[in-house]
Structures are given as structure tokens and as C-alpha cells.
Length: 478
Image 1 (cartoon, helix red, strand yellow):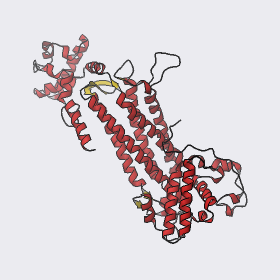
Image 2 (cartoon, one colour):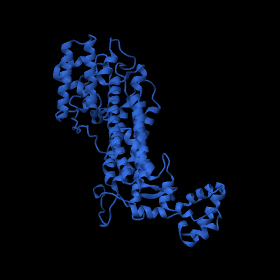
Image 3 (cartoon, helix red, strand yellow):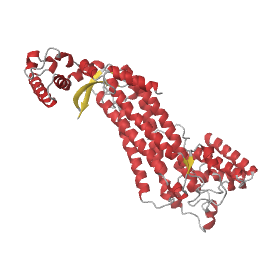
Image 4 (cartoon, one colour):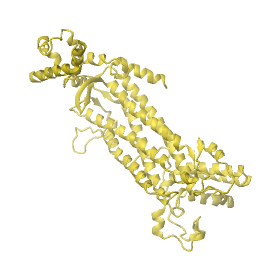
């Protein structure tokens, strides 16, 4: 199961419908018979959308204050509504609130309880709004809060990567292309590559936040309202940057939710790639890192096993977040304007994506500082696979040989070394000169691992000096 969001209340068991008659519904005036029990169970959403209670109470409080400000509600009614909503907040926080399936959703549950607490004033709260713009507001508030939380965790993770990069700035490991040894890099450089990925995730979330932070409340069902509402006042109360320009679009738009879950899916994609590397690196065949025991598990039958379950689970949970994104895309693809009941199903994938990404980011931020890099093993692995061959080609180019000719000469030298079962650096000067007379004794300076990484001493390069410079720049920007 996905870890619950830290701010989410424990779900309370929903009571069975107590009164199926149409009079029990807040919208039941037009109906002559009660909702079928199968429909009741099939169409309820309070089992999952109760999670929006904080946002719903905040939106209702701001709406009531606005109605009082413009003279639609009397001051006494506003005072009673605000106090009643505060009481409901306290009941939910204390776990005393009774969620009822018969009341369908979080909105009706809270409004029904409010009316029970304060009487007719509670019935006046829904003036000048619809559940359509109410839920659109609640979800935007939720997504905005979720983005702020995830950005904070990403920043914590980015800091952990900086610390690890600094610790391993001089540690040499093989860099790979096609999962074949390519060129030597530093472990610190590799950690900074991870950091670049997660910083793009942060930027995507913040960019999505701008389009999320638009107030739909006041759009009512789809056409707006006849009441003299003050939407900028509500926006200010709730911290929205602006108000929506079109009521039809405002109640039916879920682009912001799709963007949010898309950003979550991209973040999980990155964490999954990291997980794949960690899983490989901690196998005996690689032996590049050791994960802390507290982030691993054992086998029920093989006593020697230490399984990297956290990275494996993150890799696996990535699929469900990609699925959450697909769910939202398919959910919206066939909907005409404006609101449709299909949109009840937008919340589970939003919640699941948020929970999964939050838990995964937190685990990585906590685990990475304790990862033990096996420096000698990493260095020995970098020595394999002729990782300095490109350095030899560059050496010949600097001596005046065209690159393609240098590439051919070094390829021949590698073939000779493979046949001998040795590294390029272990060939004699006479052997190397057999592939190009331009090679002199200084060639051995460029065939070392340290010489290779230190030679890439430019902005963005893998040289330890550049890794430290990148870290310094990153810390200066904080």
C-alpha cells in the first residue's frame, strides 16, 4: 500500500446510509424516490474525498466571509458559519466526525454537519456556489499544498546529493554508455547528475503551481452566479494569485491536475533510474556501494541475503504513478464542457501520485547520506574496459593527427591490448609507438584514471575541481 500523506487524517469508517429517502439528500427536492442502494454505494466518493476536508473548510470559510462582505449574508450568519466550520475542523482532527456514505461526498458531509450545529445559517452557506466550483477549488488547494510539500522534500534531497557529491568528489568510478564501460568519471559528478534531474522536477512542479493557483470559486455550476460576489476577495483569502476568466472552463478544467501528476510521474521516473543504478551497484558483481541495513530486508529462506527493497519498491511504484497519469488523461479525453460526474474519479490518482512520490522522495533523502561508497572497488572497475582510450585519441589529435585517424590507431591499440589481456597503460612505449610514431613517453600521463578525470577540467566536467566548483555554485544560489 502507498504511504499516507503526513497531513492526511486517518480515514474514519463511513456509516451506512441512515435515511435513503429523497428528503435526506441536500439536493433531493426534485426527486420522488430514494437513491437505489447499489447506486448509493457505486456513486459515493466520501470514502476517498474526505481527504479534502481541510481545503473544503478553508474554501467555505472564505466564501462565507465574502458573502457577508457583499451583503448576501448577515453578519450573524457569517459568524455562525465560521464558528461552526471551526468546530467541524476540531471534530475531524480529534477523530470524532462521522462520515456518512449517504451524504455522498466531503462537501455534503461538512455542510450537513454544519446545519446540524448552527441551523438555517448552515443552509445559507451554499448561496452563490455549486459543488462544481467548490470541488474545483478544493482540488486546486490540495494540489497547491502537495506541490509545496514535494518541493520542500526535493530541496532536502538535493542538499543530500550535494553533501554526497562533495564527500566523493575525488572518488573515481566507471562511466557507462550502453551499460558498457565508457570513460572514467567521479562519483561526485554522478551524484550531481542525479541532482540535475531532481532540480528539473522541482522546476516542473513550481511551473505547474502557477497554473494551479487560479481561483475557480464563483463560477458556480457552469455559468457564474446572479449574486454580487467579490472573487478577488476570496482569492486573497485563500492565497490564489488570480481568478479564472471563464466559468465554463473553470469548473471542468483538470489540466492542472494532469500537469501535477505528470510532474510526479517524471520525478518517479528519475527515482526509478537511480534505483536501478543502486540495485546494480550494491550487487557483488559491481560492489560499488553498500546500503544501510535499515533500508534493506532479508530472505525468508536464504540467510545470507541483503535485499535492496527500498530501491526495488521505488522502481515498482513508478509504474503506478505512470498509471495515475494515464488514468487522468483517459478520464478527461472524451468529456464535453462543462462538469461531468466522471470527474469524481480524478481524486484517487491525484492522491496516489502525491503519496507515492512523497514517500519515495523522503526515503531517498533519508537513505543517501548513509550510502557507503566502495572507492577501491569503483576505481578498479574504472580501470577495466579501456576507459582511457578516448584520452589516447585526444592525445594524438593534440599531436596533430586527424581525429578519425587517431580513432583508428587507438582502436588498433585496444585490439592489441585485448589480445594480450592487459590495459592500454600496461603496453610498453615501443608497442604504443607501433600504432603511431607521434606517441612519446608523456603518453602515460594521460592513460591514468586520475589524469583522465582531471583533464576534463571545464564547467560541467567530471574533474574533482569542477565538481567542487559546481557544489560551491549550488550552495551560493541557496
